Every structure is written in C-alpha cells, then in structure tokens.
Length: 135
Image (cartoon, rainbow, N blue to C red):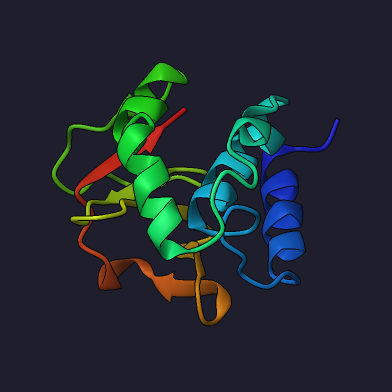
C-alpha cells in the first residue's frame, strides 16, 4: 500500500502536468479529485463537465452545496484553533463572493489550480484562510 505522503505527492505531480480547464481541471475539481484519490471515492464524477467557463461555474456552484458543507458532509472536521498546525492533505478554504477556493496543504506549501497558470504553489503565510478542514 502506498503511504499517504507518497500518494499525495504523486497526485500533485500529476496535476502539475495539466492545464486549467473549467469543469475538468479547475480548482474545485483539484480538491475533489484529491479527495477521491485519498479515500478511493468517485465524487468528482458527479460534477465533471457540469460547467465550462467562469460564469457557468459560478451558476453551478451557487446551486450546489457550499464548499464547507461539502467538506462537513464528507467527514472533514473544521479545525477551531486560530492558527492550526497544518498537516499534509488539509483543505484551506478561502471564501469569495462568487466562488470559494480550496487550497491543499502539502510539504509546507499550499496548492491550487489557477486559471492562468495551472497548478501553483505558494507559501502558507500568503493566504488568510477562512477555515481549515482535516480528514
């Protein structure tokens, strides 16, 4: 069995090779696909290609369950500490007016799919999170 760290590293490496595409390889698909890879589920299939641009994504997610509710419904626990010690695989949520963002913590960095650059990695102190979730 592949250990959790290696599985997460392989997932991130795979996504570093793909371009951003709404409804296929966007920031939400990145987070849900990671969930699928870690927990052997097929959640991403239910939203794959349900939208194809920013406008249709906003419309889709407005009628879809909110990101934090999705995390809770999938057995993630919201961390209550103001500045929790992050662990590989934690989901850092940044709420926005139109689309929430799910950043993934791995190896002391945060990862997300960016519309213009594909998978990006940033330092953890560059994002003010609204919530942190762990499973």
